[in-house]
Image 1 (tube, rainbow, N blue to C red):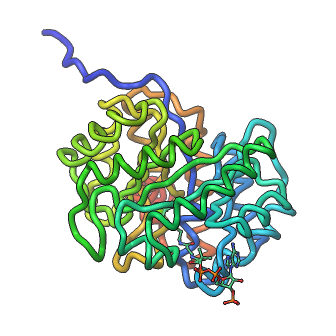
Image 2 (spheres, protein in one colour):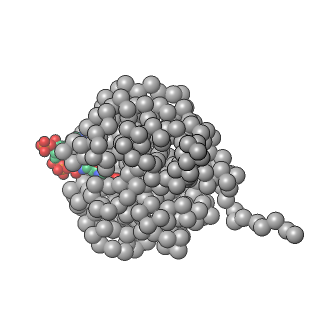
Image 3 (cartoon, rainbow, N blue to C red):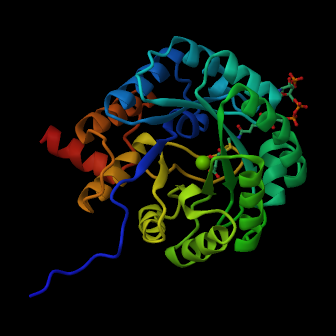
Length: 308
Ligand code: HMG
Ligand code: MG
């Protein structure tokens, strides 16, 4: 009997770990800078090569990120690992650069209402705010990643047209972002609209410059990642222990768990260069600090096996 053939999938996938930023930003339990650093160091020890380690936003808007300066200052950095920061404006960019963030990320949205709620300005105004960051980053030789939020739906506007996503993604790409991360902020997507949305964006931005960023609110994230891989996407954002959510997208639960993504990729024979056991330990560490079990079925299955 013939082997069942799998669709064409990439040989390697880069994991962009957003747990210390996207994962923790929505948590009410305060996590000390020391514990955030311990988490980041556990992730780098596990072989995660890109860690979004904090954000330089208003501490009134996102109190959990107020320690980002201290985190970046005291972090023991591992060679070959990128420690990135989220920066909404020049003030954030300057804060990130002052503590040697390796890269920064700017964040726009495909939905006007979400843009207003999240960063207090329209999509057009946000692009204008990002322009000086791009100039300063170019001068400082700092790479800039771009996010587009609400690519498959908005908590305030509902459906979002793929063309609208493509338009904003193209603007960020043309401004100089080296990669555009497509965020299903409220986790409503399914493989059909993921495929349509990536098709629309790929017509304007090369697929090799795209990443996917799925929240798992409706339990569709892994399936959606699988659909994205089939379309040639090779960069996947995820958060350790499935932490996360956006304070400005009510009901948005965590990002897809890094443990679940790596387990699936391992099963597909796709290389991530991540030590799975150490990854699990990083997730158990931060979950204990937060006083909750990981929001990852894979992690909980291994935990149950370990404790039996
Ligand atoms: P604003 O009110 O329009 O700006 O906020 P402002 O310039 O008038 O400043 C307001 C206050 O913030 C002032 O302080 C400033 O000093 C301060 P006050 O006078 O009230 O004491 N401020 C800052 N403080 C620290 N760092 C800064 C900074 N800038 C101003 N960089 C702003 C604009 C963007 C600052 C605000 O709206 C904000 O901080 N928003 C938070 C946005 C955020 O972090 N959202 C969550 C991350 S995005 C996300 O999770 C989605 C993503 O994961 C992808 C996906 O899932 O889709 C990326
Ligand atoms: Mg997010």
